[in-house]
Length: 463
Image (cartoon, rainbow, N blue to C red; front, side):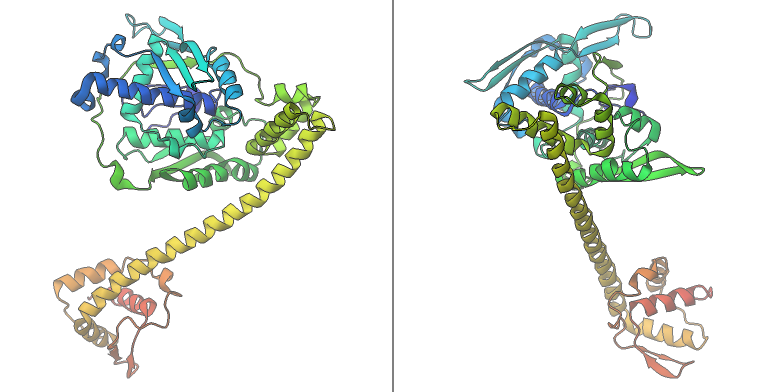
């Protein structure tokens, strides 16, 4: 799989595996896009009925799709918007979305890199608090992009509502779209550490690799594994003496649900770059400095505390200001709240790590038991011949096994026997045992001893 960088912005191809979310699209803004995509899918299905799965999207006339789309407040709340602060959040998100720009290749000059077309994503936003309806008018250029999203990637609200971290949200979308668009074939993504830091605005934060793991990478993995429909892990890749790359490995948790998928055209869709209006270098700097915290202190805060802890402290402080319950300065209130939230998060982090370790050990023992039972069944089914084989081999003799047993023992010999050393050590796997000619005694081996003997005798070259 080709290594891409998040820094390249979003690049949309017809198989959608190159979709990447630029860092300055925050989580709630992306939720709006996904909610719109779901409505566009309904429009496409309605217009094209049974032809939807085989439809060549370049042939779809976007004029037949309604560009003014209604989304109810409850839908957005189910996907992650705050119920109590919905009006304020949707106002801020709509203001931000009005600044988002799109640049595409010129429709008549696709091969010319110096020719382009430019537009806004959205034309108008309306929100009626009484009915709960948000009405969003999408620009025609944007519609060409959004209509692809749910044909090639399926992001269900239940899988994103609990992803509180922007890092987790973006990595989940990246992994999910790679899986969906490739029908589960793409299960790996490699990014350089430099690009990862740059893409998530981490160049001046968590400079040590241990802090990056604890504050960002481990939380991404635990968050996605706990709340979504995919499982994910990561490896740090070292070149020379330093770690230089991150390898994310992911797959569906329930593969049978993804065996069927729409046919994906090999024809590439137009390349699309998203240009975002300039934003503050720090997403918290504006609000924190307005409370009297110096910019230098803001940098220290972002280096020392997790994004989730800062974000929660900001929201609590905003609410306290709004409710007029603060009896000290906003800066002092925020800093005190932040310290408390970080303490809670550290305790929660340790608990998550402990729970994950226990769950991993539980799953490993379950898998080990399955392997054990399968080998045990094979031994029971062929106990007479295996007993005779072990007896003859213990005296240095030759014994010709039947072909099917010979093949199966050869496969068993490839197993890592160390994992069985302390697993059910008091249980005999060959109940009738065998007579050890050299030791002149009956032996009823446990699994570890049995596998050790099989491996030993196979290595003699005479099975």
